[in-house]
Length: 323
Image (cartoon, rainbow, N blue to C red; front, side, top):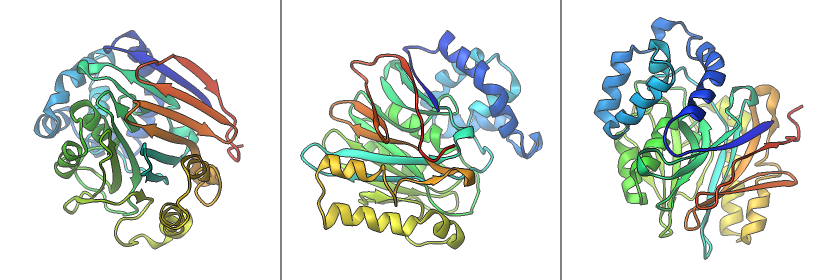
């Protein structure tokens, strides 16, 4: 995998170049069920106005940089995108300096492989890109970190792709209480578990779904189910219950020190090599919100990144099992 880390304070030529590079593949994916299956521009714009009005000026800037086309603008709204599934495990290690650790398990051919450091709308945000302005995990300059896992339910409804919801939280929130209020009210098109950790050591996990009220919990661990397993075959394939139990044991029974706990994500049962089925572990991320830092980890490789001392760069990473 070839990863890049890029910085742009305001939307401009770097982001426009990324969009031009990624859009042909994203266009194919977005239209895979036919154009009629996707919302109109007016529907996406209305949804943004209703649920994330603070993002509208940024959305309009990005649409212009993307060329102003109808399909691109509809894609960038993230409203009712095609269904997609990921694996993932995430947990809060609540030591003296709490950290958020997560594995992102997904198809390497449908992934940005990109870290973005943005200063959009006056807010510094650092995180792992999805859809070129959405995020699957990240941290902001207020010391708020966030991450997602798939919730393990088949239901698809009316709502946003969750990466844009994560972007919205980091653009507008500073505390866990603010973040959970957003997560409780913004509709998602599929079920996800979203964990947040702030600089004051508060954390929460929101269990979101398109067909029921979001549950805000104090869970320190999230894998790929919510309160109960609903999609049994998916749960068996991803070993979601086994991964959850393993993480809870590491936190409650063994009380691993920080580095040992992080390293557990780089080994089975948390680390997955099921790349042929689209659920291999693409990376492990470690977030330290008080320091406004993140690390990307792979077996034998650590890439530290910081909001305050960000350095653009690239890494070619050999992901064990991906071949």
